[in-house]
Length: 207
Image (tube, rainbow, N blue to C red; front, side, top):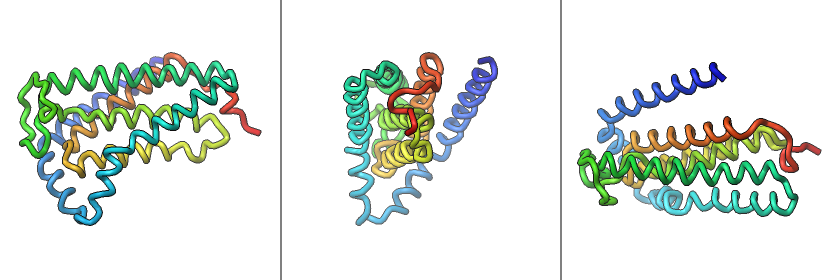
């Protein structure tokens, strides 16, 4: 556990340093990304930004139905841990930070006004990114200890696409997305580490 906590502390410190460095280049990166995406293709990241999270929600809705049908207590526990992680980290922590930092979204200048309830000044961190990575990490965990382990990185790749789409559609700067990703990963890691070990469930058992 000591080693895990040490690695977690190092990861958090590295991420914080990375976010601070990104602040310096945020505007240039945002402009470069906008210039790279052809106007004809902008509808794709827009759709992913608006509807992408619902794919994750549908999967977890299916998982709780499956867990109840199979009377799989461990899978139900993981599902509840997922819900709690989303509420505490993706909603609670992210929302408080958005209000506290009051960062303007890219189209509004990017300045930090501090303590703002205006959604135009709630850019940091990205709630979509946090939400996506909570889902991605939980699905990674479930797939890793199942017969479908070779697909375990797909949820993380999809979560990354959602986070990136938020930058492409000018809802966030890259540092906002990275901070949201870190919060989502941290929240999922804490809950999975505290409550769960890789023991088989009806979903996990190979044929």
